[in-house]
Length: 312
Ligand code: NAP
Image (tube, rainbow, N blue to C red; front, side, top):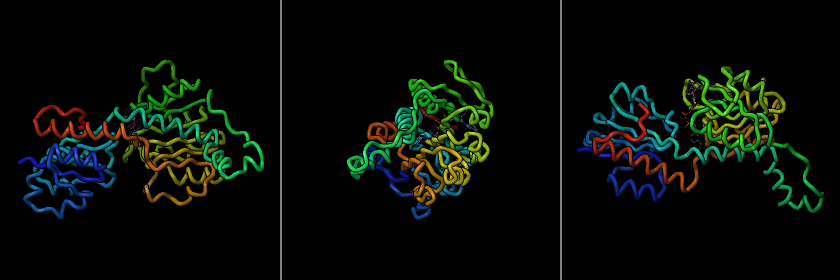
C-alpha cells in the first residue's frame, strides 16, 4: 500500500486534481492525524501539506511508513525538516513558480505606501476630492535607494523590478552574489543605514527570527519604509510597531505577520502602514502552478522517480 493524505485548505479545483491523482484522505491540519484509523496511518507513505500549522516530529510519528511531505509553497518553515531528516522522510516545496507574483506584490505595496494610494483612493471615493480639491503631495518612489534583505529567488526578482524603477540596489546576503553591480552588505544594519526602502525576502524559521531587529529599524531612519513579503517572524514586530507609532520610520508595507491572521491590533490604527492578507502568491495562475508542482512531486515519489524540488 502507498496511500496519500492531503492536509490543509485546498480550493475545489485542487481537491479534484488531488482526488483524481491519488484518491487521498483529506484532513484540515496535522492535529487531525491522530483521529485516523491506525491502518490508514500505517498505509500512508506520502503527505501533500498546505498551511502554517506546525508539522512536527510527533505528527510524523503517527505515520510510521511516511516517506514524503510535499509542501504547497516555497516556505516550509511549518515543517520540522530536522525531524523529517531524522526519520528518513523527504520534504519538497514549490519554488520559482511564485517568484513573479510575490515580487509584483512587494513592488506594488511599496508604490502603494509611497504614493499613498489607499488614502488617495478614499479621498476620491468619499467625495473629499470634489469638496476639498486635489489630494496632498506624497512621496516619489522611483530613483530611491532599495535594500533587499535576502537576495534569493524572490529577492532577486524584486531587485530586478526596482532596478527598472531606476533605483540604486543594495542587498544583504550571507555571501556576495553575482549581480549587475549591486552593492553587497554583510551586515543588515549597514544596509539599512544606506537605503530608503528595506525589502525583506528571507526564509522564515528560527534562524532568521527578528533578523530585522530594533537596531536595523533604527538605522533605516525617518525616511525609511519596511516592506515584508517573507514571514512575520523575520521582523521584530514589536520594535516595528513602536517605530511606526512614533513616526521614527516613514512607514511599512506588510504581507506577513506574527500570529496571522490574528494580527496585532496595533496595526489596524496605523495610517503609515499598508496591510495585505498574506496574498503574495495568491493568483489563480500561480496557485495552479504551485498545486501542479506539489502533485508532480507526490507522483514522482510514488513512481520511485527523482523528486522535482527536494528540500532535504
Ligand atoms: P530562497 O531563494 O531560498 O532565498 C532565501 C534567502 O534567505 C536567501 O537570500 C538566503 O540567503 C536567506 N537566508 C536563508 N537562511 C538565512 C539565515 N540563516 N540568515 C540570513 N539569511 C538567510 O527563498 P525564496 O524562494 O526567495 O523565498 C523566500 C521566502 O519568501 C520563503 O521562504 C517564504 O517564507 C517567503 N514567501 C512568501 C510568500 C508570500 O505570500 N508573502 C510567498 C512565497 C514565499 P543566502 O543567499 O545567503 O543563502
